[in-house]
Amino acid sequence: MSGPSRWGLTPRQSVEQECARRGRDAVVDGCRALLAGEAVDDGLVLALGGRPARAVLAGEPGWSEAWLRVWAARGLLWVWEDRALPAVAGALDDETWRVREMALKVVARHGLGETVERVAALRDDPVPRVRAAAERALVRLTRDRA
Image 1 (tube, rainbow, N blue to C red):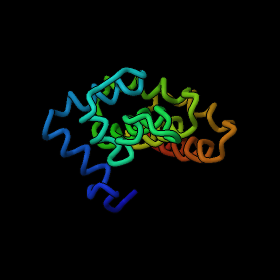
Image 2: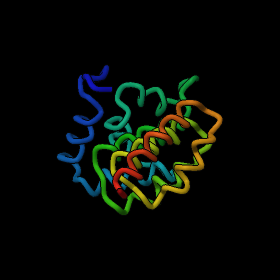
Image 3: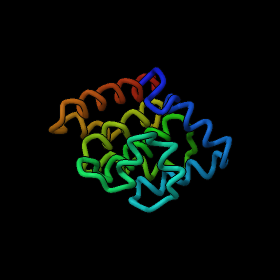
Image 4: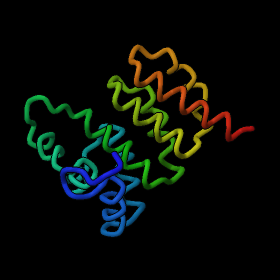
């Protein structure tokens, strides 16, 4: 998403604003925790997910908690520390395709070559969007090694 979201900020702007508010380390650690299925404070969830996060937090029908992991991975697109690598690598095996897809975007953006074998395996994922994201990530990872 390149333009402002429904909450008036792009995801990047929202993550940057949250980093300014609570500190970069706290945001990275919160994203890591969410990817591991752990609870974090609602304020971070709202910063990562915007208005739709309210629906997840309220347990509204149609909103899976998997969205928390999607938003956590998306947050790591914009704020990165190497200590988040294990969480992102684990997200490549998530049961929810949107989490796998977003984790692949993080891998590509940050050139996480340590994940190349797992990324290559996702070229056979049953979901076309995951397969496409895996191909893009592999292009990035192999280009960076050349």
